[in-house]
Length: 210
Image 1 (cartoon, rainbow, N blue to C red):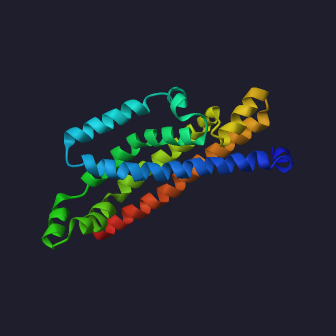
Image 2: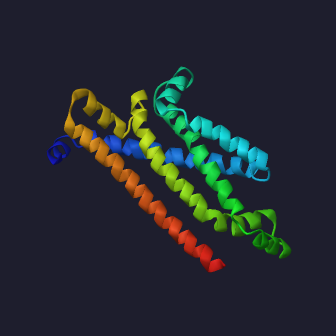
Image 3: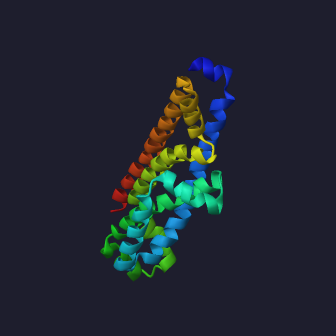
């Protein structure tokens, strides 16, 4: 494996960077979409249940099938992969954001309103900080899920570590298979640990405010 890395470093570094790019862009867009969607349905139990159910049905569709369905409309490549991954993440993120905001004690909200806080101040100073541990838990799951599904996205020419992995499978090259699997696993574990640390830090901060 080391010999392959030294001889063909670009065959490992390029897919790794592509995978990081797909993952980071996907998570950013996913969160920017999930927050307004969650806030829109937050006040209605019916809308919340419907939205989570719809996203849940989409999440249950195998990634290869969803890629295939969208190829005629979006074509091959990274954009289609990111679009699919963002849709998948909505089920995880919307559910965790809703759960996070609903976990905030109503008495704390009433107290803040009584102090004259505006809706924006209430959101930024009270709701978001207190809901952050649950939201970060959702982001952690979404990150690990994205890293895994992004590997399959190589089948539609999206690049990433899946390119290395599938190329190894097609050519029966065990070294490529091992590098692709190993790096994807390391990324998933690293994301789980790093976001997990942020989650624990936010939990400590919430406890400190109580």
